[in-house]
Length: 90
Image 1 (cartoon, rainbow, N blue to C red):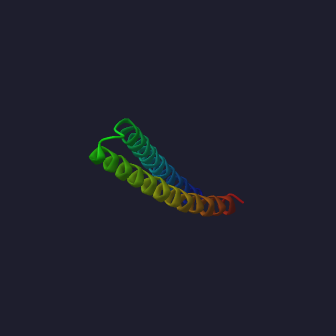
Image 2 (image 1 turned 120 degrees about the horizontal axis):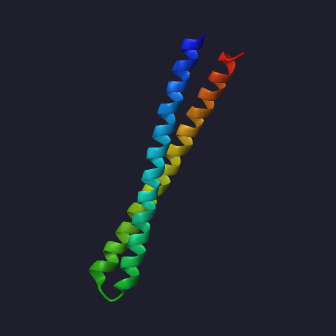
Image 3 (image 1 turned 30 degrees about the vertical axis):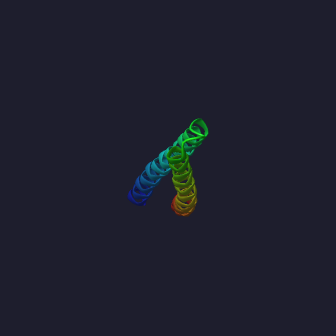
């Protein structure tokens, strides 16, 4: 029983580390959006910079939305694991 609980706790640690990784991807996506806004706003008259800025914004939004999707997925896995952990402690 105790060994089974240790395995579940190790699984929880792995899920938490994956969650931290996903959050860092989200921060990177937000940095892309910010850089795109700055580039597009700073170089208003230079067409290639405008295009580059909009591409960075698009990439950033895709990364943020993908990170949200993966984060919700991992949180669902965490809830399932916590339910299993709660049943084992009874």
